[in-house]
Picture 1: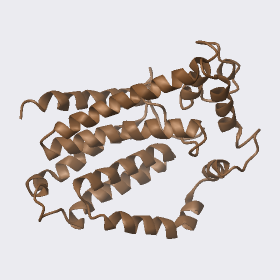
Picture 2: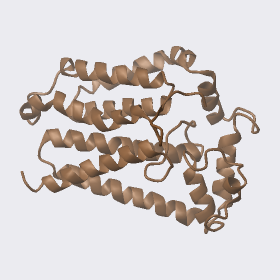
Picture 3: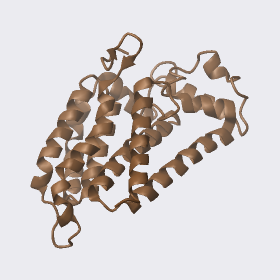
Picture 4: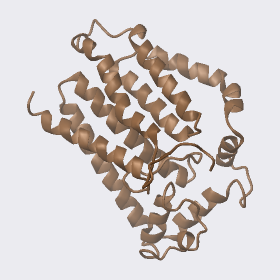
Length: 275
């Protein structure tokens, strides 16, 4: 509430930061395309210097998206880039040093967070008033728990129909699904996502080109991370962030980017037979 994340295009609002999810893997793949032959040699791996330019772009993207402020999307971009670096073959000591820096710099990072972001982390630790800071996550848990095993019935959920649950059609749509369709409905949705991700991973393992593999992993990661983070936050296992559930939550830009990513992955799946 107050974030400047969208550009109004009269008929709908467009979120430009979502484009980074689609084009970051392409940029990383192009950056390492010249190393494709050496990547398959056990004696030759890319050095840290090969990651300086992609790393600089990744950090810049993270900072400007966070400035909107949109910490959720910024973290998705950051983690997607780091996972791509790990996949390409960056020295594992890089992640050890990065984790150590993050641990030692935690007090400074805490001061960089906005007050509402700090409150979300405190709520995860069990603090906050149930009528204020904890309200959203408490209502989400009530919706999920009240659905029981079979649910209350389609369009019969009280938490969302009576507007107790904020953002019920966007970030907290999974809570509505669990309330109306119950445990079975929630498991069915997660099973469909798991089948989709398993199929994509199977396709990526069949790709012979490193360029295509980097693109495939990058396009998969942002959808996979968004799904895991969204489900974890509505169930109270992670702090609340503005990350929708792919293919389910309302939002034109996110839906378009997700469908574009899946379409690109389908293109890779078809072309793997024509090498």
